[in-house]
Length: 617
Image (cartoon, rainbow, N blue to C red; front, side):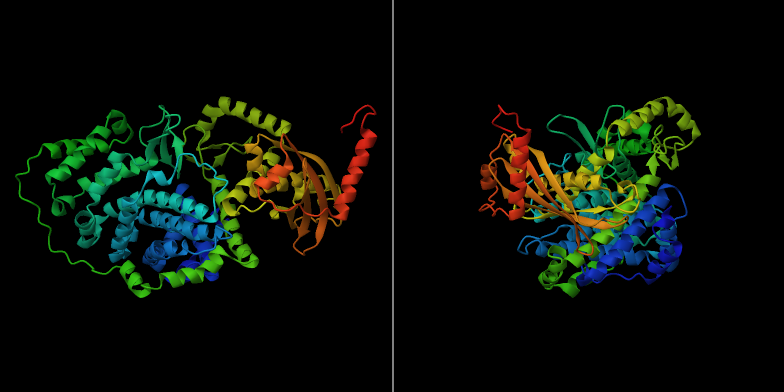
């Protein structure tokens, strides 16, 4: 399963040779190759931990003593995002692509996820000392800046959003996600404080006062909010806002982690040595009691001890001796400080150097970056295919239903219990596949989503491009090349994509109009062989008061135009000239000879088909 992503030999080789990236190398072409492998390691680590398999990545990191390297890699990226990224966002003109920058930002998700899988194991802490302080500082920084407003419940598409807007939106979403995951990192460290230097405990309790920070986050219910429109309750779960029903447990997975962390912080044996419970602190902790009602205790029984402790702590007098922290020698300079000293004053220069690849990549460079991102999506699909939730008890499951091969169960007992309901679902799925072309709708949705996420909106006079691949479902009777019908089918995808990226769709919505495809003419020049990538370039070449005329070209990697298409889309309830004026299309293009002949041929055809007493087509 995970061996399909990276073999054990490949994992060992990469971990053994792993070095911390230099800050000024982040965003270089060579760095993207390293990024792609680290993301694969993250996917493998998450998948193997979920199915309780041998954790090959963790074992390799522990064997070669590279945990500290991954921590320093995270701190390097953090400094880059704090210092270089703001300078990068000041650069003009507008970026032509947002995907390279998004991949750099997403790297933080992968690194935090890897550290979660490493620090879950107590044995990892035997090789960690000062690096724990770096992690604590990083987590506190992220948690003090977390805001639920950065991640709205429902993402509303903005047709006027620029590439900068898209990058900033992704940055906020990633920050909220990694800040949430910092809870687990802090919890794992707190559970191992007895095996770590006292400077680590001092950093948590004295320097940052983490107990108060976490208590305030719990009381503000940062991972739970109501929709202002419909009043429904949503909780942040599995990196997204999920509607929460009365039948659901009172605590989400994230909230469980937060409560376990505050319990560890307050009931840990180190607390009495380093932490003084002043009246202010007692007041803040007493606010937690209202959240610990019976349903919460029933869901997470260890919190009963915490509730009792909170009651006793609030009633205790403040007359006892004040806790004096012991003399603790702390490292005064952390890895982050060394990085800032080394690159101080160079942030703008680094941003300018990286902007060429991140904002204005050449075609070959973008293809190189996109290849790594495509591999990530493929592996993500494998993860989703292999680690699922049991349809009956909602636990992790990797066993498929033997009949439909779609539903997952943790065991035979759950499968038998769920069969009556699953049988009806299976029948409904079969009927859906029989009566509807599901792949057609999925392709339209994915094409439009990809365009909105990674392609900048252009003018109506600009060309747009989508990509295709001739697979077994597209073949002709000879099983060698794409059949003629697939060409026509693909035209729908490129037209919808063109309408969305050019602004035509927004104008049609504004005018309560629609576009009807009234004519298409294809000239097949050469076949598209099986297992061949191709692209479809769409360009508006003319318009009149009723219709727009598009030209589509099917082009393979050798640059040959395999098919040329002319298509006519008539707008209902809208004057095309007014639409083009609104879109600032400029002067109308000249009518080319081939298009002129085609329009005239349609007029002649209409005359033949038109009833003698009718004046309109």
